[in-house]
Image 1 (cartoon, helix red, strand yellow):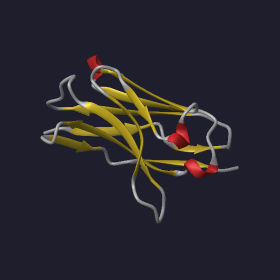
Image 2: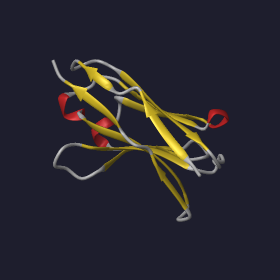
Image 3: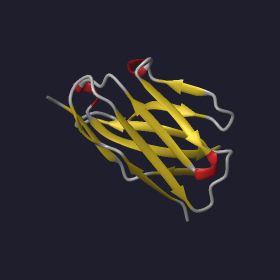
Amino acid sequence: QVQLVESGGGLVQPGGSLRLSCAASGSIFSGFTMAWYRQAPGKQRELVAAITSGGYTNYADFVKGRFTISRDNAKNTVYLQMNSLKPEDTAVYYCNFKHLSTYDYWGQGTQVTVSS
């Protein structure tokens, strides 16, 4: 049984920063690709950023240069550093651990609200 627990969301003013964390418990190994998705009200869930087991990163165009994804395999944790936040970044952020088509785990989500 694998559980992912996100933390670090909250309310921040435009231009501010937040750091999200997602820690996994259970049978996790370093081969997982770890990712962050987000879903705003009335919209589909979308990929924000991903990092492979080899450290290769991929970002959505709308966060390039502002967000940074990283991972700590020893802690089974993935992070998302979010800088220069905009109101349109407001959403529920979900972490995802995936390995091939066999394993696909999701966290419960953490709310990020960017507002003055």
